[in-house]
Image 1 (tube, rainbow, N blue to C red):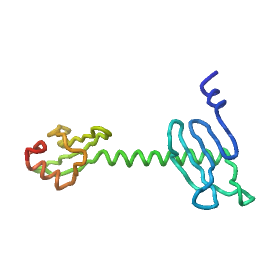
Image 2: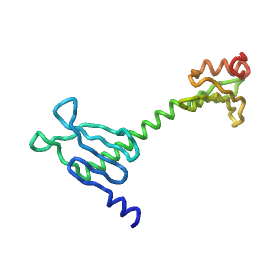
Image 3: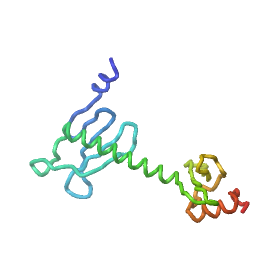
Image 4: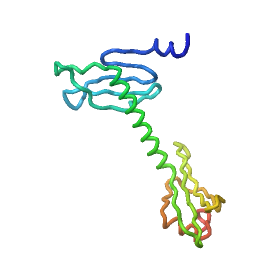
Length: 163
């Protein structure tokens, strides 16, 4: 059986539960009020990527059944939420600042390697032409600002503890 047919056979299309193409949409009772919510979970993930309000049915007691249009919209929205989360994480782990050193533009970068046991970070100075001027290991909580980058450059790019 082809992978596509196996995946289709594993799909579930129920009023309150859809599982298709690596995603599960589950309509759940909203614990905060009398309404309903929908949770979107990608296969292999323990937590939902998206939880949002869900529409009540005509009887105003039960949730509206899931359908193909709603499912596709929920998948698209969950992908967007995950993309934004990844962008936010990348922004927390990498920062660039440009400074002027002796009339030349220098880019100072802080790259953090998250690790539960041994997180680390690297501070790098790169000239406009792409040549690396300095690269030093710093604490993962190192605070990179324009002023700190300028001080580091003006001091000759010392290793931590040398300045």
